[in-house]
Length: 142
Image 1 (cartoon, rainbow, N blue to C red):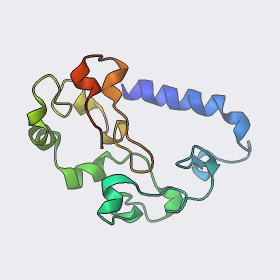
Image 2: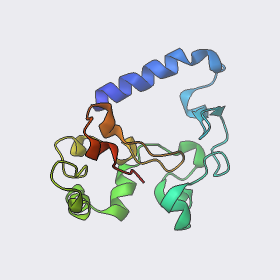
Image 3: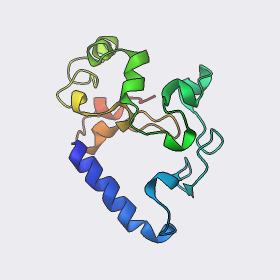
């Protein structure tokens, strides 16, 4: 799954190459929450949304790199520091039932948290890419 996501990211970068100055390195550019290419790595360009905003978290609570320009989107380690292990997440969402407990399923351990949960833009229900049952459609991803 990670290989597929990496390939999709690479292809997206290639297809959008016309949007970028070819002398810019990948570490010098990023798309902000509006999808625009930016060199601004501040909280203004990447506002924190949802529950993380309500809790008053700032960038450094999740991004452990020293410089904003080095911030990574690979956040799973930071997510699990606060939210616990996959097993604990599965217990916390156990009331959804066996078929709908997205945190205790055969796919979950191979997916990073930010596959569905986003801090800088709306979260997405990735289950619906393959699963069509009504119970999956009703899952609310926060």
